[in-house]
Length: 132
Image (cartoon, rainbow, N blue to C red; front, side, top):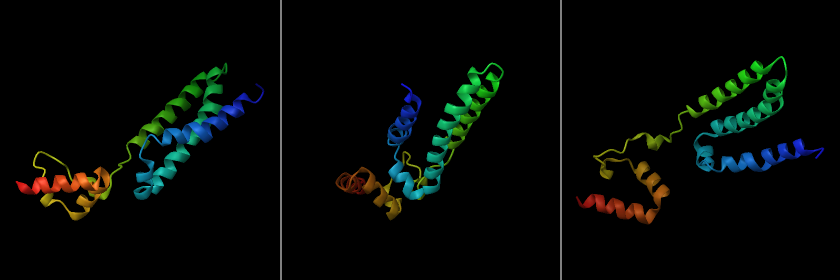
């Protein structure tokens, strides 16, 4: 149990944080927003270590509990600001509304749709929409 803290840090940094990263479509984000992905990964590791080694000890320190709480609030604000980053692919700017008409769409949008939902389904849907 002497090395439990180090084992937990390695577990979190090598296994848990990358596993949480797989919950989002990071493979698609890294193509269009490489800087955002790099910044977010560095930010999440920095937040973990700042909270683990600075904020939590300050909270349990006699004279500095408010400093630790302020650090926790600042890291939560950093995560909130990260969520406000506009994550859109250039072809995703068109709004799909009630007047959904694929003939007015750009060829890039059709190819993107085919890649996302599968070519067979997209071709069938496009041919169905052209019947009207």
